Amino acid sequence: MTKAELIDKIASGAGFSKADASKALDSTLNSIKASLKKGQKVTLVGFGTFGVVKRKTRKGRNPRTGAVITIAAAKTPKFTAGKALKDAVR
Image (cartoon, rainbow, N blue to C red; front, side, top):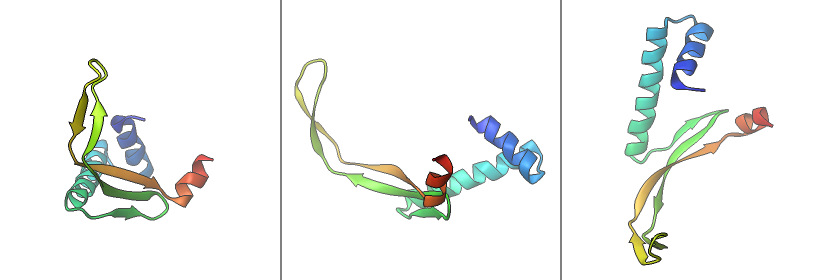
């Protein structure tokens, strides 16, 4: 499903115009991004939890040359599906 298809589903399901549904979706996504940037978890009960994990510096290999390289530490977004979502997919 694409973002446009999701906006269509939100608009038809909630009785919004497509413009209002687009604004609502963008606002929701921006709020989630802002919370993650602050290092906070975002929990949507019945859906799942968004969080940030810190990866340590590690060694890797350049696949072309085989040389050992150092991969820098990084923060990465993580999503853990909730029980209701897992059950719905099964």
